[in-house]
Length: 464
Image 1 (cartoon, one colour):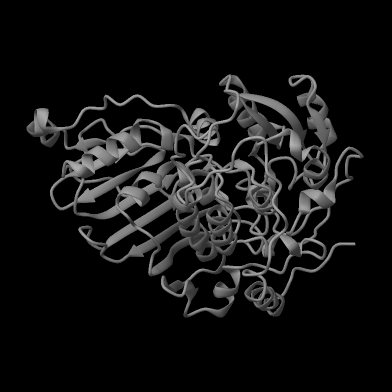
Image 2 (image 1 turned 45 degrees about the vertical axis):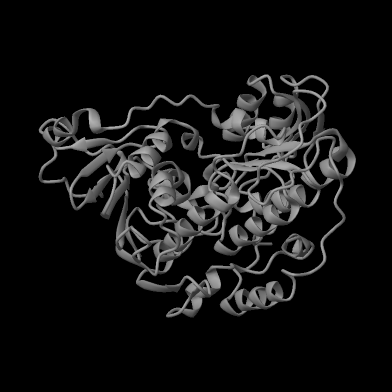
């Protein structure tokens, strides 16, 4: 039988529960075959006896399977364990990785095969990132977690704390953060080319899975006998199996996914957030919500984030536009024939304006006449570096530092979590960055934590 959605009082109960458990004693650490990192910045010090990391792949289908295959293709790891809640996906993956142990429940994988791997990739639905990550870090495992880092603001907070506590290498899967865009962005900030940015318009104007849906209620379908639904649900509220949840559709629902923010925000706003030192906004506003739903993300939204002045950086306004027709305004001086990318951003400064796409795509200055005026003053990209998967595995060996460690990607994800709350509730949310509380909306403040974990899943909130 389907359970009712948890109430606001239950959300408050979870907050009370967490306050009493965040500082609690943790489970015993199991030391992996690689030496665990020593520094607080997630750089794993101490190379392995070999040049390969023993790797477990959690999430073997779709994006999770691609992530695992990408890491395997580097030649820097041995795949020793596989885990997927759907036995069909698990069986398909096992043909690619001969000899790897197979599990549908990640907890059993750690119990029975934990000593066979030193690191893992986690490519599962947003709501399931947290418990797998916390268990892994508590056992000294290095982890690569697909974006967004977690489903709630508080889960990000706990994952950052766990990274610092267990001294493991961590990487969020916004792979463009190992591309040319961060190299360019950092060097242009240092050279004073990118400066005094006061406004950013970012967009994701492609269709989403939930756009064609005409319903806004929980769906139910016969569950495949190969499915471990309890493990799929994890800490999240219980609802019946549905093809509108698995596979792939979970991103559409407030209780399990983070919508277009979680999907594309980490690829589009990562360098802006990092190198303009944005931190957390003081205000998040739902400027526009079209096709609002009770359980599903809206058809289109415009969300504004207001960041205060930060050191040399002035106050910054970031506007996020999603929906196929909800596009940012075209800049008046954008060169003829050029358009804002369907997924991209425009940055407005006091002297120069910039336009770019997502992932590792570099920025360009507009209008083009201003770029030409700068000539040789623009720094060139000459740096060569490992890709995102190589960077993670080399960091697990102690040879590099991860570029999107949780202390970097966690705060970025928290910004998107605030945006998702605004998409869900509407209105204007005032945020105190010191106390990390929404001060003008009790329901919104409770959503920073979310509903209480299901019975039997509470222990993961005690591991930080």
